[in-house]
Image 1 (cartoon, rainbow, N blue to C red):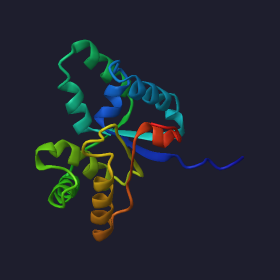
Image 2: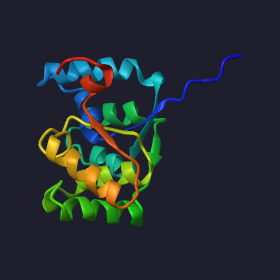
Image 3: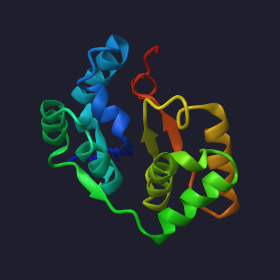
Image 4: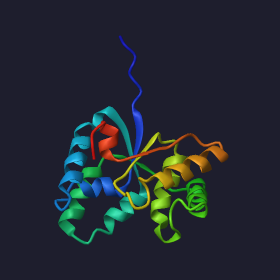
Length: 159
């Protein structure tokens, strides 16, 4: 019997969950659905921050769909280590202070030793500056490398 191939540990931020139902951005919706078809190939995680953001969704129908989509996904908790890392990312300019929840996603993913953080948030998360600062902070404090990607990148597609 062959040994099982190790699955990548992926942290999904809220933008990936909402894009599954986003009809205003057909490309994002398409790539998110394509990613969703490949979930079995990954070890998938969300966090209590994602759950809180989903609960804040004003549209009850959309909120229900999002809750259903994440049911059964492993939930990571924000802890002191993740909060400290989030503050470090903010302090070094990866994420603006007023977008602290975005920094929480990064902090949780790093503290919980995720290999990839998957996001559609190009404004604060999936961008070169954030990737470089997260890499620097993690290296400086002996944390493993965290890859930050969008769904098309993880699937090897175009955006």
